[in-house]
Image: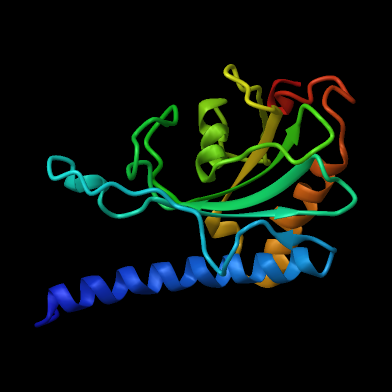
Length: 198
């Protein structure tokens, strides 16, 4: 047993965040090589947190996201996010069961018009609102905003983080399916909204 448990605990937490940062930087590289550009003003990640005194369990951020645009599709953007656990920030999302393993959620936001739709970091949570799951094959869930500003839809899928152990895994399990999803049109095939129901 360690004689410095608090130090070790925070070092372990730092290693987790460094790992998430590595994955998102690799995502940048893979998407930039395919002509995408970051939609973020700086080298920042989107996240959500709370400093409410009565909710200390949500002080630590639970998820991180990066958004990207491509000049060939000016009315849509793609994103890749990492969810570490199911509590953190605003607790307005949930899964059927507790999220015991981290999951990577990637998706495409399509605008209702010809221009880039308004978007927020928390749009990456729509997968959970759409009853997504990361069991087995990636499941595609479509969320259609009820109070639409100018978003037409948000299609996304989840992959368990333990399936991504290398750059090749990230490319195969996240980036390639994401680009395939980005090329589809809404309703272009039957069952697109919930492919797990086929």
